[in-house]
Image (cartoon, rainbow, N blue to C red; front, side, top):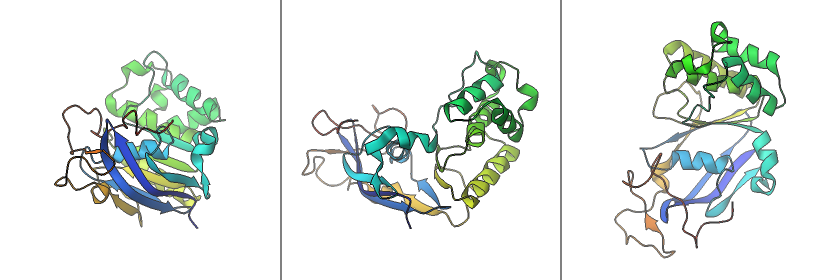
Length: 244
């Protein structure tokens, strides 16, 4: 039985159509890999899944209910790890993670256990500004272990990790799934996620050789538009953008 699903999703950014007609369905313990070149909409789809933005068309469901009807409840059931590590440089390692743990109903003891799991205990009391890029990424990943959430939405989580840290992350995937958790990962790197489904974003892209304006007045978004930030995906026009 599907716990988390998307139906006929359309994504628009900057008056450009990124993908349309996209569906997925995930049961407890399942994983989904989001694949495609830069600009194909992987990050945009993760933001839709996190209810940070709204689809132009279609619905996202949690246990058959529209998750956007109660965005606070959906936020409370997920960990979202984006490109940015969301680490405050002025705070220590333990202060950073304790903040996140308390936001999700845990505390300092859980934060210290998570820091130990990612191998940062010797740096627990060091200001985060002294961390390397890989250590900052490990601190961000520690959030996954500091408070239990059923849904993990991860955007290129392996960037900056060495092999030992990647092993920790992949072990976390396996443990999370064994407990019934769901993992969705956008990646360009091979990850150990046995029996994961793959969603190729290019399969849902409009035909770039068609009329640049389709019947809805939306323009096709190329893989790497020069004026688009991040992954190159787009946002809706004033007329087409739904309410957040």
